[in-house]
Length: 224
Image (cartoon, rainbow, N blue to C red):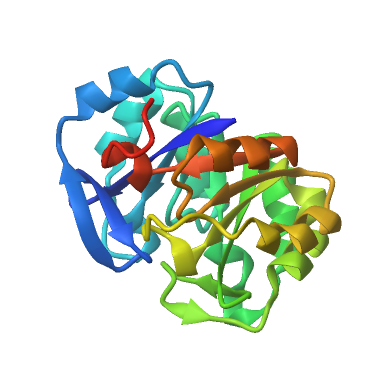
């Protein structure tokens, strides 16, 4: 399944290369909401919230009110998760809060699951060089994605894996990196990071893995 991605920063839709350099930006929100309306779910990520420099709450609320969404970026508490679900999001994506001090916080995962429930929770595993990166991809850890997925799987409905090395590069996604992750859990896996073609989407689908696509859609390389 293809999941379109809407990344928000500074009140606009943007596309970044490896989470750093801005390559594209748009403010025609209604047009993109209409184009994505046919999809069963759309991913919304508040990059400002992820990096701890404000938020794009009004835009998150706008898209969550028009589309079925999974929303991430700066969700570090039960209160914030509930707030975003209150905007109309179907699911929330939690990442850095699960890895304080470079360790997996199972207590927080358990507490979050107890308060929110399994189904609305997706946990984010973002890797650079086969190691988890946190806090808007600004800090690295020694945690491997497969280990994170294995330990956290009881507390969520699925995992979003982003390959930072290929994110926004338009050079394709290294599907082989998912082998260990797929073997580590039976939960839903969603992949992101440089997916550029329907052939890749179909290969991932054959593995039971959904594909988040951003840059390839916004540049027109992948037609929707």
